[in-house]
Every structure is written in C-alpha cells, then in structure tokens.
View 1 (cartoon, one colour):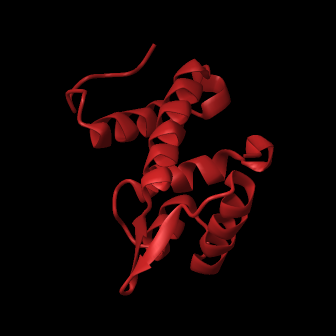
View 2 (tube, one colour):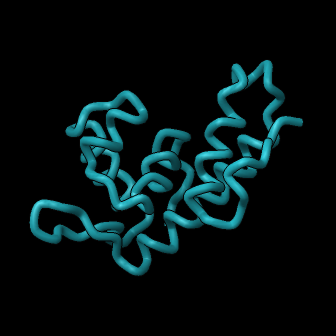
Amino acid sequence: MRLRGLDIDDLLILALLLDDISVTDIGKKIFLTQPAITQRLTKMRRLVGFAITIRAGNRLKLTQNGLSLCYAAREALIILLRSLPDHLSDGRGNVLVHYLLSKRGDRCTNESYDS
C-alpha cells in the first residue's frame, strides 16, 4: 500500500463515499467532474492495492477494505481540519468538520466546532 500519492481531494472523495451518494454528486460537492472522480478512484485503487468500490447496478458499492479506508480517510480529515487555524482554512474547515462529524453520527448537530 502506497498512500504517499493521496491528496486532500482523494481523502474527501473517500470520506464522501460513506454517504452513499453518486460519483457525480461527490464531484459537485468538491468541484470536480464525474470523470475526474472516476480517474481518482482508479488511481487510489492502484495506490492501495485493492478494490475500494464495486459496481452495483448503476451505483458504486464500497468493498469491506474500501469501507475501512473511507472511515480512516474521514477520521484523518477531521483531525487535519480541526488542527488548521481559521486563517488557513478560510473558516471552511469547521464547516467541513461539522459535516463529517454529523455524518458520523457521534456529535450533536447544534454543537459548535469553533476554537
């Protein structure tokens, strides 16, 4: 497994795959096209050495290894974004942390993550 080639957008894609939304919708959320998302998933599969998703009809379904990787990506993003000062993240880091935590279901949606 070679994680060195992963970047923040790759981690975001992995974290968003947990929400069971389409590749097109993931692209809209992070301002990439569907083909770009698909290319990144292919790149990630080569880097990690296992299938992250499998095709289930017209949707993608996470493999067991893919599910573990996506949860790890979500946790890594939360740690990274919480550690950034607001002036580096333009204040958007807390919004993304809030989103990721609310999707994880272990935080109250009214809780503030401002430092």
